[in-house]
Image (cartoon, rainbow, N blue to C red; front, top):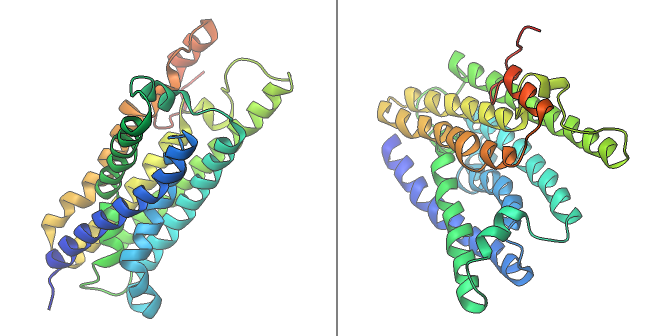
Length: 280
């Protein structure tokens, strides 16, 4: 009989192979269209795809005995599909490649060399990040040793994950409405109302909070399986997601070029990431 560690290692190897194939599939239209920002659309869909491939069949045969896996799959599908649709709408509305990817492409030349760099430096690199970030999701979806019902730690993780999803959805909705009014000439400057008065990047914060919740579900799976070393990969996923959003591809790029008295005042009174109501 496989131990929790055996299951985890098998799932990690399988996940790596699956996401590499998935990334290569998405790279074909991206290279053809010269739109590496298609990787942003693929990002959200990769996680539920991976969870379904690795754990979905098990859940499909026995939902009752794998409640945690069912919950983890449900949360990942809701988050991933919504994110892909949201980014996909933005992708379709722009005729040109996102400036981040265009800047990367500028030094790559053209032809086969550029295509190779697109595949390796964008899509395959993203595959490795997905496998690392997805660790708690993979644990919750596939390690089914121990209790078959949810414990108190599972409920904590579910509440945190749903709170993060709600924050992310609300932030994106408010931003979309604000930008529509701005295009119509009814707004100017930066969005500083609603949840954007609690955080300068509530959409990214909601994303990070959701993954903290999934991390708690992964930790619960490790503890139930009496595989305490698996707490490490369960915790690494949310940490890496936070670092990416806060210090790499999220906040720094979003705030690049922003300036002015209004912006400076907003920065002074508003949390940079996690929501926090400051006294007025």
